[in-house]
Amino acid sequence: MNDERMHTGREQLARLNPNAEAALHTALDSIAPDMVEYVVAFGYGDIMARPGLDLPERQVATIAALAALGNAEPQLAFHIGGGLNAGLSPQEVVETIYVTTVFAGFPAGLNALACARTVFTERGVQPDVPPVQNAATRHQRGLAALEATSSGAGKVVVAMLDDIAPDMAQFIIDFSYGDIISRPGLSARRAEIAMIASAIARGTMRPQLQVHVKAGLNVGLTRQEIIEVGIQMCGYAGFPAALNGLAAIREAFEEAGAQEKSAQ
Image 1 (cartoon, rainbow, N blue to C red):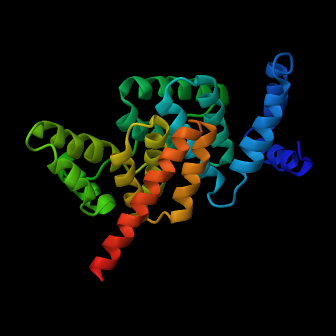
Image 2: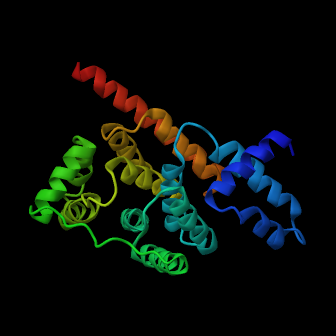
């Protein structure tokens, strides 16, 4: 492996956990020693060290993706710990998992929270008292969050359900937006990073991914930051999921650009 890539990867990995490379050698040297170098040089030297997204927000994306996949508990535990080391608060980790639950379902969310509890216990930390929602009704909060983040795009999705499952539209507004997305414990930009990462990792949510790419732009994410989330997913959900996600992101950017021009 190129020494510079390994050096960069080691530095980046050590920011999350200074003992991580040694643990990888212990686990893999007897069966697949080259995998250690691939993880360090590619996963951390080539991908995680890229300058387009800061480390705490990369950890939000990683925690969300691993929680959404639901099949990588050791890696999720590592990145929850790494997120804390990178500057995320325990409450931000929990809030990221709440957001992910909207995309991956309650079993994935509950399992991820159990994993987080173990990490918090080992670290001797705990989340803050859950933030208090504002006094508006769930429905009012949901409509406000939907408008603030999606600027009409989310309403189209809701309208599509009127003729078949209007109650589902109500659930989207009241639960997904009113109960979860409007929670004050995670910034709007980090919540959108979590949703974009979850949708790419699951690989079956192209329309929803595009809604949240546009929402990410609306709450202040740059195009490069969104692209970085897509690129990063190649290491956690695989290249096909990342490539499909980036194709959907490109279309969302084009649509957002066309809408901006028509509004001028």
